[in-house]
Image (tube, rainbow, N blue to C red; front, side, top):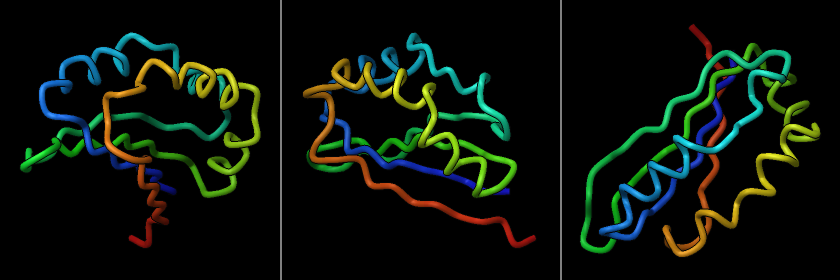
Length: 100
């Protein structure tokens, strides 16, 4: 199994809008071989932001990498403008392979 996460520093006061964008967008993930599930995680609030992480589980790293080159990936990331101004900087990607 492969876990892909992107961490976002969401501007204080923009958390509900950030969640709404993720909840209402079309992800196209169900069209992709090897996709298992998705979660949007909300973490602690700090001085200037609230931490969020998108979390996807994949059958394996190859499935995740295939998705990053797919039409589904291009379609969902064409919607990225909806989050403009909602978070600080760029998302921070982290990928993990399950060992147990």
